[in-house]
Image (cartoon, rainbow, N blue to C red):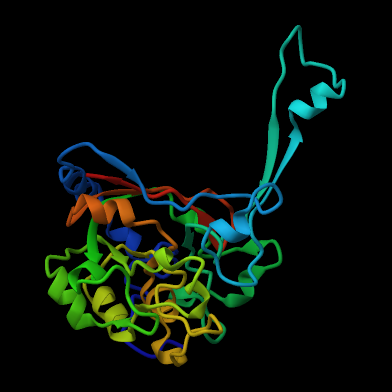
Length: 300
């Protein structure tokens, strides 16, 4: 049951895209005009298969989550062992990749990822989330995102390399850093927490406070992106301490239809010093998916 002002019904009774509806052609064209230098930065973490690399010790991830599995179905060793070439001298390599993206790599949450009660965003029945996927609000509803990204480099603003583990970013601090947020923008928020990997990464995580989530929703952002694992903060058990009323996923995903992009790598963007940029994000078209790995691009 929705417990605060929300976007249910705002974009139609059958809406499954939430505030992405604000990315009209005019808004997209306006965002594209913001590119200045043409420099392109990839804001994604690398995907390293746990079965074939030291990924468990080199890539930030939440404890206990299954890491990506990367297998080669055909490789050079097969030919060395006598496998038949495709043609005269023609050989190939082929791989298989299994990614459970939540908590393990840069990804985007679909609106069906979390809810309370028996309804998804916009009143869609939660019973439509089945073992084969979600029949409503799946990641395939997103399409592609081209928007103005607004960068909130919180630790730099405070003179820190990264935020303390228990730091919660409030609405007043976001207002202080970036008061020029416009409807349809994507708020990109840096905590610097990936820099703590592996030393203290699992001791908890800094993140947004509940009032910051409501502040962003009230400014009609198209999405919220962050370099931490859950947008909100986490405790040492990698759980949120907030009540359901103040849970960041419920505030943004469930009540306001604001998609979330998590576990970005924002250090090069921080070094570039850009306050805003063109942001391009295209999730995989996984029908009924609760999310998708993404490689967000910042065009400066």
